[in-house]
Structure formats: C-alpha cells, structure tokens
Length: 198
Image 1 (cartoon, rainbow, N blue to C red):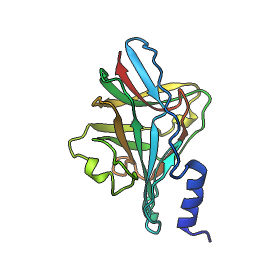
Image 2: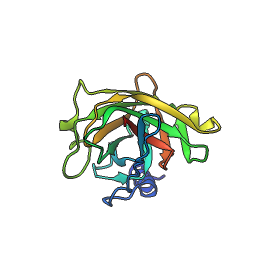
Image 3: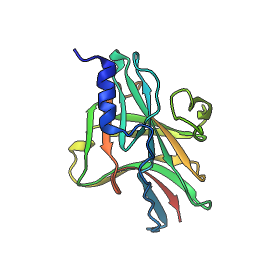
C-alpha cells in the first residue's frame, strides 16, 4: 500500500513546481465599472501532514484540503503583488469560467484571512505564523457544488485591506463545513481574484 507521504509527494509533483518562480501574475489595467480585477495570484502551499516534513512549495493550482481522520491538510497562501499605491476598496473573491478545470470533493467551504505579509525566505506553516493576526480581515468562500454549474460565475468573498501587496491565507473550514478538498486551475477569468476601485 502506498504510504501517505509518497502519495502526498506524488500529488505535489503534479500540481506544484518546488522552489521555482511563481507563475507570472496577470494584471488587467482595464477599469470596468470603476473596478480593476487582478487574477492569478502567486500561490504557496502550506502542508500539515503527520508523516511528511515541512517543506516550501510554490503552486500554479488552487488546492485547499483537509482529510480530517488521516491528519492530512493543505492550506494555501495567495499573494497579489504590485498593486497600485492608490488602490482603495479592495475585495477578495473567486470566479469560475465556462471552460475550466475545477473540482470539489465532499465539502468545499474554505475560510480566508488576511496576513500582514510574507516571510523573506520559504513560505511554510511555521514561517507565516508571525504574519497571522486574530483581528485580521477574513471570511469564507464556498466552492461546494459549483463545479456542476454550467457557465461562468463570480463569487464575492469579502473586503480586505489594500496595500502594495495583499496576502490571503486559505484554510479548509472544518467547523462549519467538514472534510473536503477544492482544486482549481488558475487562468485569466478562473480562480482567485482581488478587486480594487479605480
């Protein structure tokens, strides 16, 4: 039987590029109805597995999960960088395009909370701790059942503080949602986004 650590590392190889440069963030300079929307943030996987050592991992795929009984979990950090210094009224959310790679297993309720920044080195469970705050802005986004919906849809998560960069921690909501996983390939128009007034 394949060990959990081998399964995790095998899956990781499919969805991440370890220690490589993040995918290039695509920022639209278009101001539509007073809002600029930024897609494809840099994604950093945060692993919590009983028998896998902590290691940094940069991803191109949104992937948040919690296996509960196995003790396996994967959180994710999304960084929207190079924002305008004049950005105001920032809102975090996600979209699904009509043509997409998107799946949810069991429950897809995910909590999000804003981090005050990112460490200069590796982004891991221990290095992000100093950037977490109990009074950080946050909320939840629910991916459950949306893969079955035909056509494009936009989903608003909630307001966050603007800055030169906005960093969001995504975790599987085990209190209101329970075990499950969300996997979504990022594209321009599919995945996480940040909006600000323009």
